[in-house]
Length: 164
Image (tube, rainbow, N blue to C red; front, top):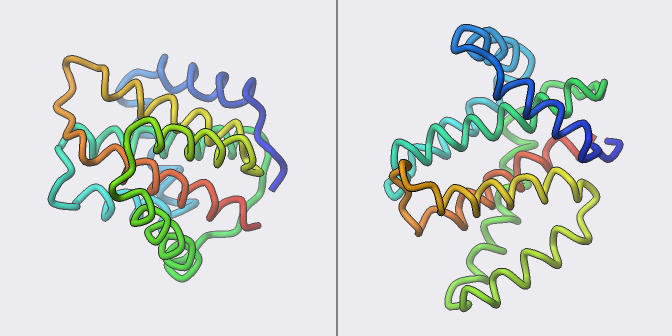
């Protein structure tokens, strides 16, 4: 997949941020129709025991924004299936285990390196920025334990699209 630019991501994000609830529902319906496996992946991932309702909803919302940035950039991707997603997720979960015991600064350094060398650097940067900003949102009920998991979910999501 061609690299998605920061400008395309910004346009997609602003577009969605300015939609009314019914507009988001309509866009979500298009997302479900075009990529049912990817939507299911986000929803199932959000059901992990340590995920709060706010973090579940935010994962789906960020997934919608990332998908729309890809979609509105004119990228034609095939309908992704469970096998595509699970293969990538397995590799990313092994990486998550690697971070166990890392200090916050070590984790931040490793993530920064991953983002800088990722073929979809701007999408990854967007995901990381929003996950880290989420931790600072006072009105959101966020379990700090889920931040690394959110990163892995969105990394898997982006890499599944990038595979084609």
